[in-house]
Image (tube, rainbow over all chains, first blue to last red; front, side):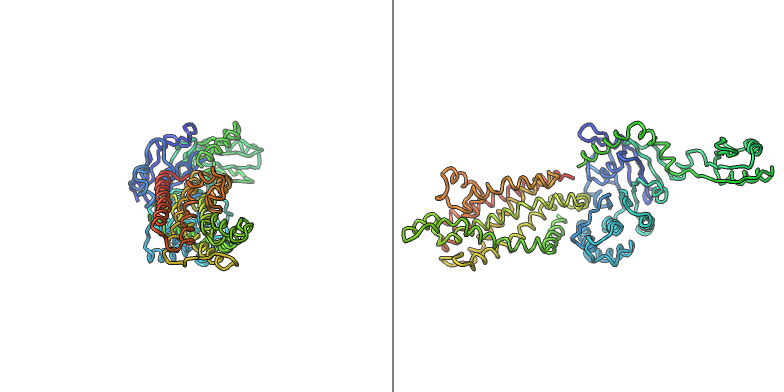
Length: 332
Length: 272
């Protein structure tokens, strides 16, 4: 559980000599964990993944995946990783099972073994009934599940999931999350996950790196990152101004602002610990309140804090879009 | 090359499962032989014993025009089918399967060789249907000196080699291209010159001198002539065998060279 399975040192990718997609990126992924990569469009997530899965070669730095160098031993790397790319890769003219058996042959999985795996994997993602139907009859969610199977046929040690729930509805997304958790625990694989949806990273990842402009800005568990924002927000609305003034004098709060008539926005280190104190203070001083809400920071706020995405949008949404388009073109 | 077998099986499954693709491919040879055989038949203007001699002269001794062009039509059909091997590569890239292939440990070349091999396999039933159709139509294909297993082998070899030659050229082009229009453009640009600057439809005697000179370097001519010679002559003389060996040898050398080139270029890079 504790060994390092992926390590990058100053990993760099410059497209066409000028577009710097990934720049001196350092990552360390531990065996058995789900590791999230979050970042805005054009941050370098997919480029990083593509280098680690040896689809493209880096222009600088190095990376070791499962003990193998991604440039010198790319074939060994490919043998021990499974990939679920952003786009669908299954052949529409074949059935789900035929796709699965074909990909098994790519990895020299013996036929008998592949058939056993096929039963297990189709059951794992609830796709047994559709296994022998042509993929062209599948819905988007079914195709995504088939992609999970195709990434797992050879029992990889590491699974790369690039935006696994992009374009899926909310129900299917939650379902996918369950499959991913199931895969991690039952098949004992390390999972690298990229996502636009921060609640997805929050839900699934043991640790996460926030990436922007091709660099890692911060790494930690979702809890640590949220904690790094220094506190939760408790909003209290009291019945009169006098009570509000009294409330402001309470000890042990980080910051307090009046944000509306008799309404205080109280920043505390931890709502779990501070809430009982606030309630005690209210009852001790016989204050009466009309409303009390607690807001814990989400990863979205962490993301905004570190990427300054709102700032970037304000100063140049066009520029960001152009950069993303250039990168997509350079990748082709 | 752990990918070659499963990928070739995949191509063949896709072919058999797509009825339009499958049946049009099988019907097409009948159209070709019937239409080309009637449309380009110049010997209909000749009559009488002298006309017969003239016809025999310009048809290299063939009893009728259909017998003459079977070798050419077989070759052209091989050429056309092979040129489309590349389009499958572009489709795999735009529809997604290429991503799966490239992230797996199979050799890059097995992706392309599976297209080449499957297009060669697709041509064979077409070739059989074409020969049978040519034989059955009125005033059709005649084997003046019989038809042996060796003749059949020589014909098959020539068709397979021509298919290897052109499917490898067009597959390599496709691995370097991202859009379908460009490859169709190239196919359209070269297919008619390849077909008509050759002895596929017309003999050298019927051509302008310069055209006849250029046509002898076209592999389409080599294949057409190799097939035609065994059909028209049956038992070959030793000098005819030497000539036959030259044509097939040149085709084999070219095919081997191109397949080797394909291997090296494709192992180096397939555009993502």
